Amino acid sequence: MLLIKSFLLTKIFLQLNIYILILSLLIGFILLYFNNFFSYFFSFKYYSSFIFLKFFLIFSLIISFFLFVCSFYLYLNYIYLFIQSTIFDFCFIPKFICFSKFKFFNLLSFKWITIYLTIDIFGYILLLLAYIVGFISIIILDNRLNWKVIKYLFAFNVFVLIVFFYVSVTNLIVFFLLYEFLLVPSFLFVYFVSPSRRALQASIYFVIWTQIGSFLVLCAIAYIIITSNNFLFFLFYFYNFSNFEVWFLYIFLFLGFGFKVPIWPFHYWLTKTHVEAPSGFSIYLSGFLVKSALFGFYKLTNILSCHINTSVFVIICLFGVIDASLKMWGQTDLKKLVAYGTIQEMNIIYLVFCWGDSIAIISGILFTATHAFLSALMFFVVDCIYRRFFTRSIIEINGLLQINPNLSFLIILMIIFFAGLPGTLKFVVEFYIFAGLLELSLVLTFVLIFVANVLGLIGFSKNWFNLIFGISKKNFKVLPLDLTYKEIYISFLCFAFLLFFSFFTNFLF
Image (tube, rainbow, N blue to C red; front, side):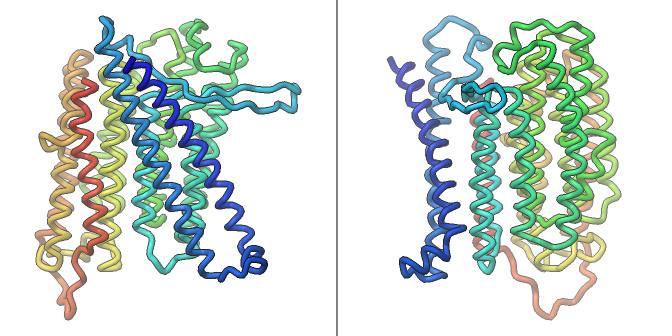
């Protein structure tokens, strides 16, 4: 009885969530683009209507997030009750839950198309990252950008709705279209928050490189659809691809999504984009957008029924970890240093998904959450330093401990969490990943541990320690302001989720 009740409540909360997102989007669109009409006929003040629209969008997003958290909790409770009520192993736990369906009219075939919406644990985590990373970006925005904040809130509502369909749709063509539609709010984010020439060039650079990978993904999807004559994900499990077809599709999917992850040697666009783009876009890009490529790779490779030896792809990801770890040693730009740190972690996650072990994939899914909150925290710290000193160069900033002790303490905590202190989420997921990789190759595991947790960590920490404990080269007549309450709140939010998910791992493992 409790099992059925949890299942039905999960479906209800998910359906309510998606309807609220659609309704708030329609109302927000009417209020945003017909503001002059309402002000003239209903005697609304021009400024007060903006305030109402701003609070309406924020309130609708908070309600949506509350419904999402309730459905997530009920989904976990449903899985727990399912385990307790059966004698089956963990592999028999339902991978997804179907909660809604939509009908669309196809103008080409003049038929109604039914699209079912399903969601699994990875979809829930990706949607959670979309909410949290977006909220952090909203909080970071300055109050003086009232008009731009309203437009950004509207774009964020569109973004959450696209992500909701992206993680739950079962039609392969619609899945790819939604993957491409994520670029639209990405460009709007940069335009509304920081419409500078360099920022727009960075976003265009990001779009061009990701479209190269999208072309390869489109080729793989077209071959899958033409060969199997099918569009639905759950029907692909009954179609057997040959070994050659699996190799062909896996290479295209690995490279297609790898451009966005990014893998070695195609990661140079990411560092350039991070350096040129504003910090808000860096948080958004590293905190969520690259995770959408991981989800796409995870979902599309699961439909390939034939297993292949993926050692070549694992070695490519290992080269990416080595390359990013070595380049962290010689960086002087803090944003570029953080960018290579995120590239290192993303290549580890991609390596885990290429390996394909069930426990490793669960660890990789949780590692995506770890990387999202860590990267958001690191880029936020860089933004705090830049707003105080108007530079990101380690050469120009030294002795931060004497100038801003609270900010220095925050950086030390960030380094500790990046290092994977026992009790944190990164320590737990790395423990399961490295323990599982020992079964694959002892040499590979030793190289990966040494490069990621020794060589890369020393290069990453060395630059930050020079920033904190170095001798100050400037005499400040007025010391820069230390951490504000808003900055402390954002930092606490990232640390809290990193600690919370470490307890969440006890349920999955």
